Image 1 (cartoon, rainbow, N blue to C red):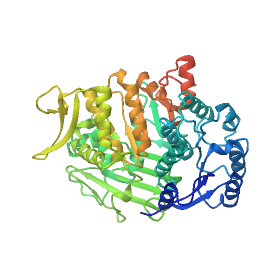
Image 2 (image 1 turned 60 degrees about the horizontal axis):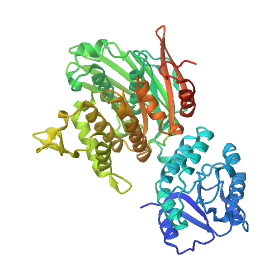
Image 3 (image 1 turned 180 degrees about the vertical axis):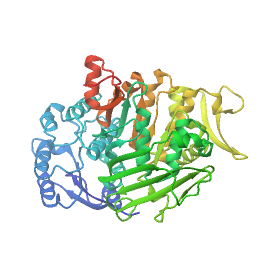
Image 4 (image 1 turned 90 degrees about the vertical axis):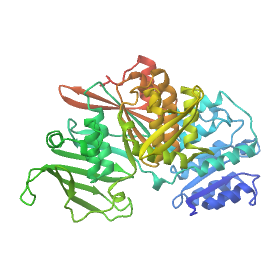
Length: 532
């Protein structure tokens, strides 16, 4: 296994070079440095911060009256660099009041209190803040204060070994397949819509006919670049057709966009997609011809899939029973996509082939030491139906089915015999393993789900998004659904967007999760209607 390109700096006065923790770290990372004294650790950062990605694991036991304390270490490290991913303190005695000034000044990213059992959540929060830029330092401070309410004394060795496990989970920055900005110049009813401050979880709210689903479609198309069958997939979903080739010719001719212009910043590089519907041209035989598209997809650099910078121009011609490319620059399927992505609509459960792929991914991946699919089943048992034993995929005569083993029935039952809400939650949860490091777009999340279950399900979505490094875009016209995410004390992971249809013009307003949370608490704000 190739080692990760990070330097781990351990500032600890007791940990020896041959400690199993140090040995394990050296197997994972290019460089592991131990400094016994705080001042030597600070000197190392001073000398190396410009050329290294450094993660500092700092032992707070330096905070005794005989040695410089953790505050001193952090303050001096930050004099030299504000780009260190984060500093973890194995603190057992420090108080939040000791650090509040440094939090406000962004002197450090996280001060871990001694709640061992909840620390995993804090570490993940700090990780996401670094990757996506810190949201609001006050939310961070509140998070630390909340953790301090359940202070639990644990041994130093437990803290350090726990951090080793968590450091393993830190994804390399180069693997972050996420958008930071999206601009829709032209797509259906949307014009000049810009999404900024895009986060891990992005909630898009609005009343009916405000363009929410259209916005998801645009993002999905941008991830797929010039893969035309995904354009047809959007038409299939929009028209509620079972298969792409069930789409009537008249629908394709009269109900697809004449022009599309979408751009964004993805993995810190610019990308753009343009579609233009063409009338019949001389080179195309008139028989059965429906329409043609000229597609231009542009990626600024070679960071994606190691392909050279290029503007791919593709011509696609639709006939009565097929479509074909006439582009001389056809590339492979994976190279046409910015990342793995999936568009999940209220009608997606009909797409059994895609569900099969998602199921397969969920049984092959793990969250910690638990198989992902088992984690999903545990959620359904604990929060939805305590009598569920398991759900299995079976294929009989090319028929894909999901079978439920349930305590209330002597024989297994097809999943479709259970409530739509259960089916939808299960199917959505499966998607995360299938789009790891990619994008998941969920249309009308609350559809068929009991509003009393939304808060629990929101918690699962956030957990899966963090575990699989998936950027999520969710549309909703339900105030309860939107507030369910904000109430999860994960506001720094969330951005909210309000789409307003005013005199047939769609406008977009952005709120940071922490800001919207304050609006909820102070004035019972409704994101669907917020315009100022």
